[in-house]
Image (cartoon, rainbow, N blue to C red):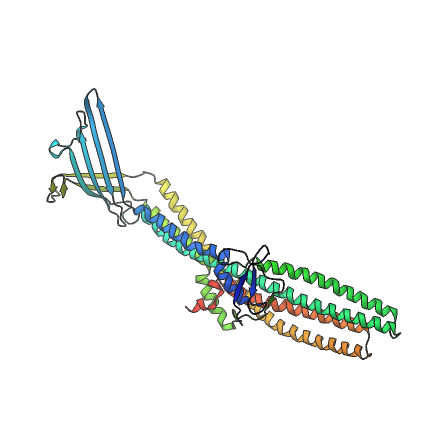
Length: 476
């Protein structure tokens, strides 16, 4: 039964995670709470925001820019120059840079190329574009940054899945460690109670002359050993409970603590054991979608975009600039456009003769892509091997769990039989202690393979890179 969890605030240093109906807490309850409130999972959720911020910063290269300058020189009652310049540059995705300029120049000693007719109150307006005909025609630095930022979004998504899965898997392991410690504590407590009762009965038999003094010594030694095992198990349980508690948080980032009487449940509806035919489907999915593979592919994509820019940089820079002067707008109003009159035309050309810088960057990007290709192959191989290895362990542990359960049940029958015999005077303490030791050993082995089996059920989707450790992601 899924329990409704509430938080009780008392005199303790931390709030306590409490079950409303009982102290039984399932793994499903803890995972449900952790998916919402765990700090690492919240931190993983920030990866998407990092990606959005990266894209926003890259898109900033397309932001319009307003530029203004003003210079005045007045000397001995003579205005040498009075120059004002303002421009609005509007970068766009296509390789065209529109620009609108406004100039107001006057003065006795102006450079002739800065001269503006007083008929327009010294104002001059231009509107034009700059078009790259060589380098930058197909891709430039602005478009490179934006494309890389978009690819970074895929990398950030993979990192979010990786961090979330790691946190969830760590919680699963902590839970089953707690379960093992709790069951071991119960076992040691039960064994101590049995040893105590036997010691009491042997002392009573000794008082009536029906048992030797050596029997009481042996019973006491057994009882003392069981006490020591009980104390050790209690310490282990407390440590496991505290390690489980570090993963429990409220929705307002307040740490929670499991109470000492909390009971872990063995049932969990989160994972199944896939059949053999599912393995190929899981591996096929992981070869494309595993977070580590996605990150390598994302880096490859970024370098491929960068390589396009470096290849474009091998071309000569040839930019054509054309600007209308006072058209289609002037200080006196609208004027018709005439591209053959009142214009400024310019051509910018540059070309490094040896291209060593450009060729070096291009060669470096090629090597980085090649290196990441090898990294991708190795990562895919490692992921596939981890999936197969985990599946084999999972299958083997399922069989071991069934076998050790049967073994533990058989030792339970033998122990019950010895207890029955000793109550009827037909056995001795030596046989009883042997059967009890074997029973405890078989129970510990069963608990170990059981908890290992439960961990492996979560480890398989973890090594497969399935988001939120859910097999449903393969079928979406």
